[in-house]
Image (cartoon, rainbow, N blue to C red; front, top):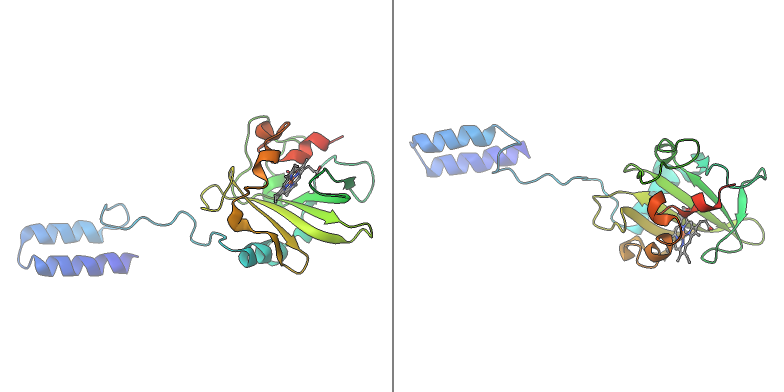
Length: 194
Ligand code: HEC
């Protein structure tokens, strides 16, 4: 970035050869990031932009197997619930450390939002108890694929997309806005806490 600016700067100053104004321009240009001549930096250069990137993020970079169970969802030891109409028959919900850190006494304070980088992960379990689908919400307000501030997707366990992140949560956000969704940053498992 800095190199590109200063190269542009040299060209401009050569064009203004011998001109004091050109020299002054060049110094301010080389001065760096605050200059209006510098192109804006993308807010998040490594932003997730595809299903393969999203799936590998939640299975390898920050694997869901390391997440914390969503607090107080169920009294049983395996933390499995009957799924809502969207995901039957049974589910297990967990969250990464970033999301968990936003909770106070197991709740998101009313009206607060999860920080960018938060992940809430739902395994949809078949009758055998084995996961068949993963539903994922990843907080990234600056991502062009966000819907209500989250990335939304569903994956089969082999990584194939059931619901692509590029849909921007179009099939997800309206239901996640029902009930207590809006005051819980669209995370609906809070309504199922005991
Ligand atoms: C018909 C309503 C409905 C639709 C549509 C829906 N969800 Fe959900 N979702 C819920 C409810 C209710 C919960 C709370 C846990 C449960 O009952 O399954 C939930 C839970 C989740 C969770 C765990 C975090 C949380 O909010 O509690 C994720 C992740 C999730 N859904 C992702 C999705 C994605 C991705 C889509 C779209 C492809 C989607 N959901 C569509 C109702 C819905």
